[in-house]
Image 1 (cartoon, rainbow, N blue to C red):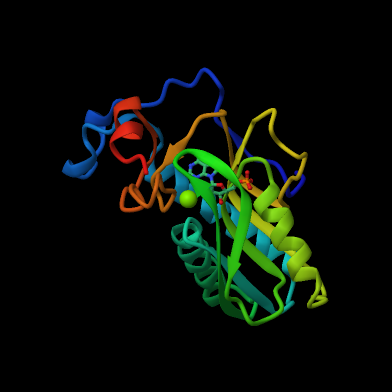
Image 2 (image 1 turned 120 degrees about the horizontal axis):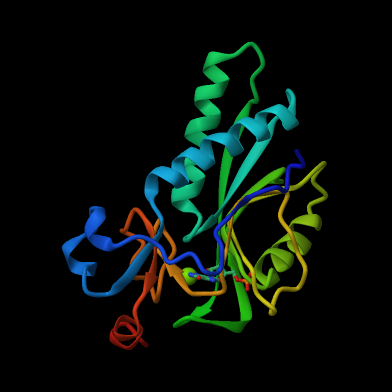
Length: 211
Ligand code: IMP
Ligand code: MG
């Protein structure tokens, strides 16, 4: 199987009723459906970790987390890689670094991609979601200036959208419909990062948290 294969969440996937899961009280009225339950995110992440360790052989990895939206995925992916490292004959040495990018206001991409931080070369970057691919392409051209030996991009989500630049990460968790998603560190104007499941926001909430 190619490393870029992913779990497809279909366009007509209706999602799950909120009542079937635990969501924080303060968000109960803001969400429409659960699209990817936390357990499924974890199961898929576990497999991505296995694929990455297999492909990296014994290479040292500098894992670069793209904040803020990537922080949950980064931590969980690294935990799975650590578990593999301590339970098998082959292991991948790891160091970590963090970078912050910002391009969104409300549920729309803005023209400026701001990048802050990051002080090492990287060979693995970790991302929350790729929509148009613009954020990742900006970051990749920046990283190439430090001439890393190899750069691999892992993204939990890739959105199927006509706005896509065609950019595809090396490892993808899920491919999702062209709707705005929140939870598992993905935000709407900084809200909803403290939600475990990936969910669809309702229109009232978009108004309520608008800036
Ligand atoms: P791109 O540059 O269009 O690929 O957008 C990627 C960035 O936009 C991500 O890192 C997120 O910060 C943000 N983004 C895109 N789609 C969503 C979404 O559905 N929910 C939350 N943030 C999103
Ligand atoms: Mg955001």
